[in-house]
Amino acid sequence: MAIFGKNGFVWKQEIAFARKLLVWQYEKSGTALPDERAISAHAQKIVADAHIIAKKSGRTVLEILKNKVTIKK
Image (cartoon, rainbow, N blue to C red):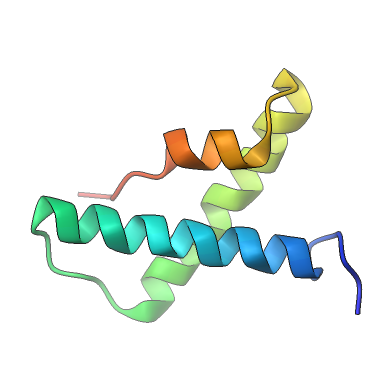
């Protein structure tokens, strides 16, 4: 199993972390949770965007995820 890359262990862990942050944001705001597919798709988009930003800015993906995760209204 690959560790890095879009199908790697690290990428999957980043998506799981982003999903947890999204669920937390929904619960914090009192908004109803969308279905699992919508949350997963949003988390994948956030992680992909975070990697692009990290490559350009030199910041870490984790730092970007913490700042970027917001719920769609």
